[in-house]
Length: 248
Ligand code: PGA
Image 1: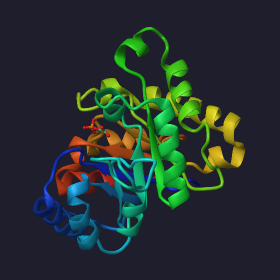
Image 2: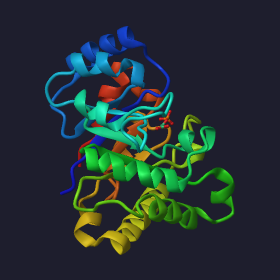
Image 3: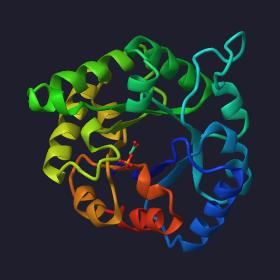
């Protein structure tokens, strides 16, 4: 069975002190998780998260540049994330694509460099509402997947997150059927570019208005291997409740 992952995307929230308090409260409310847990803090709180996390909980960067060092003012180095103990890096979140203009070509380079350094990219894809309403969901997500993974090393770990843009931060979660349809399709596309064992082993997370109340029905679907959670990951108890719901 594929491993399950529940990840917290804190976006531009939580200063170092708030991050430490979260970790303490979260670890105390955690039962016996049946999934891997990952926290994505903003870069300036990464050290606080790294030093307060204990045990099995992992963390990652919300972004990393494809060059490890040099004249790239304001960027984050994948190499430094790795040195600080990060396991993952989010690549291609819709906010990076839309607000910061990150292209498929740039995302592809970021995936290559993260994998080389030994970080697992959690690569995000998803259609917006006009694309869904125009019946273009499959075209959009398969293009994002193929272009982003054009130079990926399939012998190294990878995770995918399907996050329909219309569901992010809106309270409009995809139905389990809508999410499963997209995940099954993405898995078929991944199989066509990487080979079957990679597509079967790669965890595919759903993201977009996930809460404890909708997590249990989503996780029952065959191709849904966990969640990337924004708003509901900001409180330790609600994030712990989603972790609790994440079992097959
Ligand atoms: P949300 O965000 O859970 O607040 O919808 C998810 C994400 O952006 O990763």
